[in-house]
Image (cartoon, rainbow, N blue to C red; front, side, top):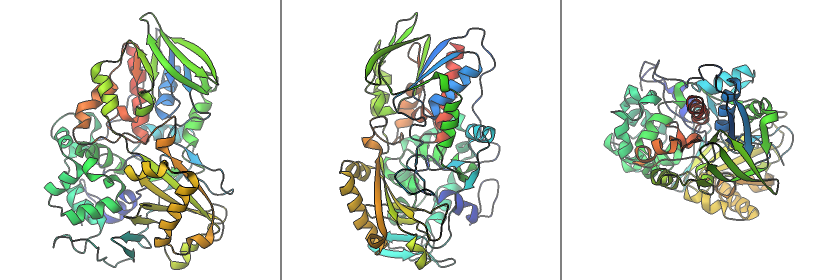
Length: 496
């Protein structure tokens, strides 16, 4: 494998970066000097406006922060009782010292807009550790434990050049070494050569590079970005997954990733209203009227301009007057999302350590991937947690179960990986994003052709109504994409 160079990365760096695999909103490789950050607004406005922002996720908070800093009056309407949207840290009902991310799992040092805020708020970053040994794989009915320096005989039919290589080496060979430098330039997504990747799926891209069906299946079950290889746009893979996230090391925030939206929300305290479900947004030309239910009561807000940052499926439930264009409606209806359900299994101690494994699991079982969370106060012997992270159709099916049924099903599957898990089990919790009324699914996940078919229409304003959210960014399903989309929408308001 290549040593670190202008176009490649060392295996050590690659292991740390691409292997995290648990719902981090994006991953990728860095091409030096290629990343373009979103621009802040040019300065205080001479034409201050009254702006309503719908949604207090990262996109909405970024938009509101920019507008307020430049002299506009801002009101944020949020249906939940907290900020952050799908950036959500789970602390209850688990013991003190344990917290886990039920939404976006990791930031990256390549996230220029996020880093500005993280540094401003002086949050402590914790590197996302990726072990080189002690990973458990359960594939084709075979349980395998990785050991440092030992090649694994994967239970798939691989070609001669693939045998003896781990999934990281396959990604290096078939993706990293084949992508053009433009992959790391988000502003060039609609230009050749990268825009042409949208016509093909991730699976077909791999096939074109010479990957066998066995190698594709191995990557599908061990690399989170390959979880739905036939349903992933090659362009999204190239730009968001491999053009951006791995520009820097992944990390989490000490205390929880939701500390960022919470701190941003504190700065907007007087302008942020919780418990407000927006039903109708009407552009009357001279003003925009928002009809909503606020803590059970009908209410209205008026604004000069509105920025709507709701997730795609929630957006379908809002009535816009005049009606959205046919192209924009088609884009909202047609852009796919990747459903995710996370089942958290609390145990009395990190018993897996007795086997010398890390708790990290990649499998083709219904539990899919497993991540371990240790007790910050007593990592060796304190209560701990195993998380089953399920995406795609399986996630939706799991989410439709009752909570106890889902926990029991995942416990039974977990026994195939850790036979003693039932003896240590104390409590479980399920987060099904498809069942969350204010999300109705996971992040956007374009299939072949979807970026070029829908992205520009998702971004476009509708009169005085503007749109933001990760689904309006080429950096789909990333926290950085959400932040940048909010800044873009704020610029539209300032310039309109």
